[in-house]
Image (tube, rainbow, N blue to C red; front, side, top):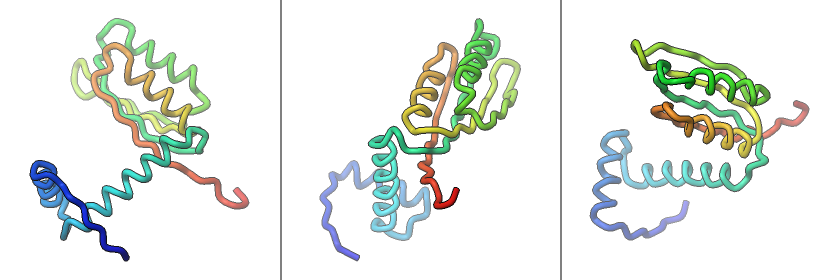
Length: 138
């Protein structure tokens, strides 16, 4: 293990301390190690668009809005090679939640999810991309 000295301004330190309390980190080193790992993993994913991955796309939309359901369904059909499974939930009279599990190359998955979340009347959207290295013999 190596010791590193980092200088943070007061505002950033206050945010770090608040995050530590919220997530239950025992000390700043644990919190910074965890965030560093997450940042490095994200950087690896962004730097290698050809890397195979699995992803979860979660988004909400107003299904009463003009043609939004059709556009979203068409987008899924146009990228059927990426879609593994989808879950559709009616949150209330107007709002639907969809969770799509995707599998493909990072660049293809990112392009599809960016396009889908940018659709008019999609209210919120997030994607989690997890690189999946091929296993020997698989």
